[in-house]
Image (cartoon, rainbow, N blue to C red; front, side, top):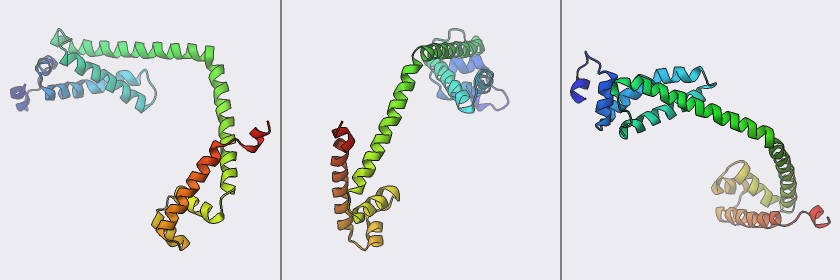
Length: 195
């Protein structure tokens, strides 16, 4: 392969590249991937929407090609083009089947998932309300430290300069506030306790 690659006038055939790649030449693998990449992407564009989906498909095909080269699964190097096309077709068929299965499952069980999403939204709403309640129980100075640290993303030294405190004091306040919030969030909300 190296002698063939050294010549700029003559491009090695795909069959020559396959033979070199099955012999362990990684440069030959790369050349095969480059040579078939455009055709694979064209195949994918006709069946898939979105550049990300096309690129993912192309990568999957090329990975299978490299695997076939390294395991010597490609018996006839002269038919590498047909082999790559076969990989494309099989992968496209597998994806279509998976989409059909997913659509069938979604039509049968999608109602359950939709109900779960509604419950999660409701739970998130309760958690936000509980967090607001817990924050309201902190002193204003402590709430300011928490806001500057976790909303504004400021460091302890920046908060100390802003609030005329020492860095150590900021760290202690922040640590205690997080401990208090963690405890508060682990308790039942007042309206749950009365239920």
